[in-house]
Image (cartoon, rainbow, N blue to C red; front, side):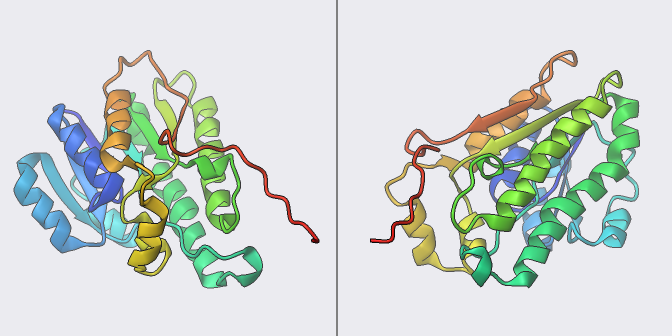
Length: 244
């Protein structure tokens, strides 16, 4: 049985990925800080789901939690977050640092740790980026920058790993209704409802469907990038600040 490591598996896209992979015969180690939720998933999903409780930014806790795993055939770098929606000049520097530490530093750290085993097993890496990597928007500032890094890092990995058999994909979703906006807005349910209301957004299951498809492709077949949005969302429309 092949084994996947899915970061941020306690909710949203990560949880959906864990469920989808298990449904197609994978064993999944799911990471997250919410021990109670991961334990609940383990009871529901059975022996195919193994909780790995740690903050993705804590390398020592990560190494301890992953002790005992023989190796991974797939790394799904899903853990990430956005904090705040204000313009750069009104942003909280601690929010910026947390996004960089989580979305960039922790992602490259766990990737670096698992790379030798992934090369040995001729495995795969699927990184969750965002359309914010390509299309800037007001208030996106550092979040968009971190996701642009993830996209470019994926392409760089793909180049460096040529000949190893390791597949690398960057998945770049647009609007997906999960707990993402609740976190971004400090638990503001009204902001969540205002963003998603009437928009028919994508869901965690929609993104997981692509992750599972890629994970189960033949080993000679690499998907470099996938960009996806709900039909209701578009990248069209430029801002114009007018003096009158």
